[in-house]
Length: 338
Ligand code: PHE
Image (cartoon, protein in one colour):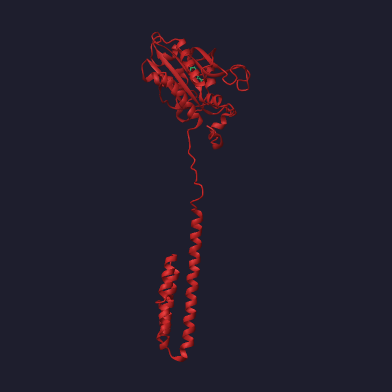
């Protein structure tokens, strides 16, 4: 029976087309092609008139079943496509507020460092680089800290392979620069230093320092005072007072520790300054002539001053941060505040 074979062919082709179809559009095309007014199945029905009378009910039933099967299959696939579309639509709801991108910013320590450098650069200092991995010569010997001398203890550090060490102070930059250049020098250098200290609220095995120094003929202690006072007023406020306390550093002579009046209580005494009214901010002094000998400068011709301060401490004072560890824990809840 020709029509029966034809129907089988239509069924096979139609089902493949519906199953392979990948969109609502393709389902509509299949519906028109097979079930539409001019569709393959419709024309098969028209051919019923050529079918022998006794076969008519069987063929009629078959056509109906085929029609139902194809309709059901198309509807099922269409339902699937509509659900997918709905999901896509919901996920792309244009009326929802946009996703705000978090924009990062500089770390508070880097900001503090740059702010300090800026002030000195405006005073004519040149900002330079210097290595963190150093030798005993730069971290100790040339800074007049001889082997086995007790002052070495203050600047204790980490030793690495090949007789090298991690610098424990940025004063190494004094030697590096003086070795390379002749006076006049007016230099600032900031970077990391390392000390094997037990970590607590005010100590870290790694922290930041900034070193400044000026060398020329005729540099005197009042130049140091003038430069530091200018810095303190610029950074902490015009009302800030300074005081110099005698101290000892092997690489400066004379040496001093420098305090500023507490800018929080204006010297009256508060929790931040431990009720002293003063905050220690740096170490300084006149470059020891022995240091000049190491870098082959004539100590009878040149004098200079040097100072070094802890950037972490300055940043903590400025922003009222009471634990140095916060700088290094990478907690965005903290970092976001600056
Ligand atoms: N390097 C000293 C320190 O780390 C600070 C300092 C620098 C003191 C320069 C005097 C001159 O404590």
